[in-house]
Length: 393
Image (cartoon, rainbow, N blue to C red; front, top):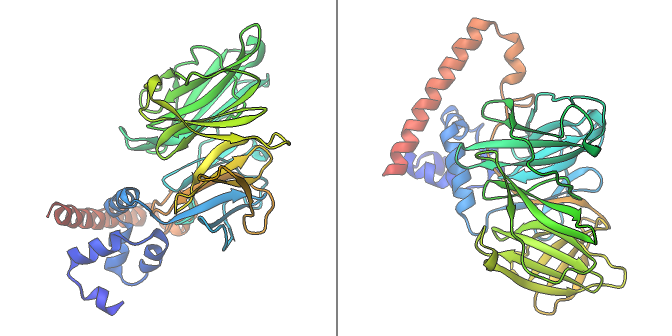
């Protein structure tokens, strides 16, 4: 540690930027200058960019069994129950994950939504958004990052059953940067999704639309842009539609489809987003006699010899990409788990209870609070200037 502190500041920055989030959180207590550096918004941004640019960053497997927990990826051991705000308040459903942030929903607390960072142990509770009436509605949720506005957003879509109620649909978007809800354009055509949580890719959330064409069940892919709040349809690959189950996911940065029928599960990827002709079938897996079909792909193993999949029976399996043999994966001695995600570490501090210094805010007067915030802002500006200068060099 002493050797690190003696290094030139620009070299120290480059070393710290390459470390994982958890040790950096511990390094904040080394000295005041390190605290200011690691806490600065610019360092947090650069560290996230550095992590995302790595070919194999430190990742954690996050799952519910039923409590929200994490384990090492891809050994699935060293399980740790996450101390999230819903831990003692009922079941926490993971709507989605993005850049290591988790979006949690508590159905027992009137659909309370919050963002949670397991690395910094901070969270942000979204402003309460009531339903317009007591009439029945279908819910669709989604969480992701809009790269244009550099903002994390949560989407809630309500659609009325049988066209009853004060509206046919209501699309509300929460902006973390603005800390407010805005209403987006209505759903142009009603859609019904088995999986209510949207899948994020390229700043767009995706749901599978299930419908009857008068003869049989059919499927389409509905997209919602977090940038301009517009809906679109993503053209699906051409395949024979027999009795099947249709799921959407993301695999290796590409939109992915799992088409399951009574005999096989086909795994497709869209190699060039938005181009129908780029759909390619990667794998064809023979179904088991129990018809246990995959719900979504989780991730490739670190050696890329296996593909981990979430099954419809709350099980995780490993697909051997050489033999196409499917085997059960036991996650930390749990036979079943769900809400499975693979997350990186980041330094994002969410501004709700748990954020550093916020616990003492109510003890400070307005003038002292303003003075402290002003001093902290000057420190952040100074550190950001040094960071920008060193990154340019």
